[in-house]
Image (tube, rainbow, N blue to C red; front, side):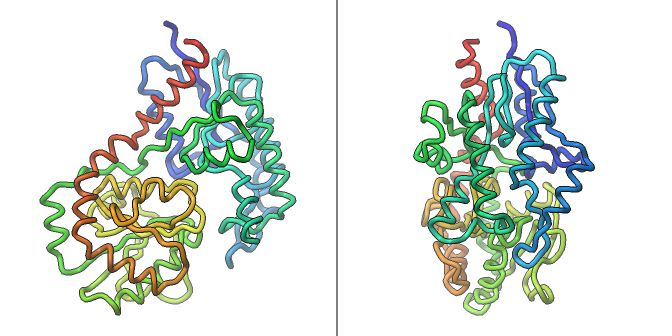
Length: 384
């Protein structure tokens, strides 16, 4: 049987750093597909002219959550220019059986499969229910979002299939009538931070320490709820019967006004190796995101044997089982989150459960498994 010739379409980081694109997700999926002997992967980079990208990125700068933020990637013009770039790239790629598109760049003539964590309809739905867009999206108008969502709907109408990271997103696509259920495939995601499986000895050492360590990871600090975590930690320090410390990773520089609070260790844009060690040694990973289409970092923490705290919203309840491997909150109250933090770090049953289930989490949430599920669908539909 001849191999599947699969085009891999992605808007890679404009600085040329493919590893950092979409928090390492596309490059890990690429490598997993590349490891297969039955697929020939073709690079189909989606690149608009750099000067055009820079011009519109600058023109789209807005103040979002008190800081300058470019809304360029959310705008309809960005989508239209990427659509042109995608078609040009496909024309240069040679004979291809199908395209796997990281995100969604518009309809094409080749069988198209989209991999995504959310769609723009989620933002419109959230606005209709609450009067607010997802955290960080407020720099663009409702009319602009609707135009962008219409372009995305055209892609759904033409594509052979949509691979989603979550059941939450899949359910929305079907419920909203954007695409029928037979063309939606939940494949979840793999871990981007490699973790070492926890051991019984590690658990014993962690639980024997007097100090308890909390970990927050998120470049988009406010969207991920970092401000809430720091405020809750300040209260938890006063309530806890033992010392606490909080490690904050992700932002390039300290993202809040004033100095770093006592007990907080800010490590910035830490390497994957450093993050791996902190995930393995933390007593809980806390990230109450205000908008989180999936949250691979939760999976990475659970695979390291570390309990997690998230929000009872979006895709987070799919893998965070309240009271089993962590806890879920449904508020922005620092006092209540402080109580949840203390409850989780002191819970021996949750700690032991996470330690014993870590290998199972790591086995399922692997990029090799995701790639296999995708190729099975594509090959079966192409009758290979």
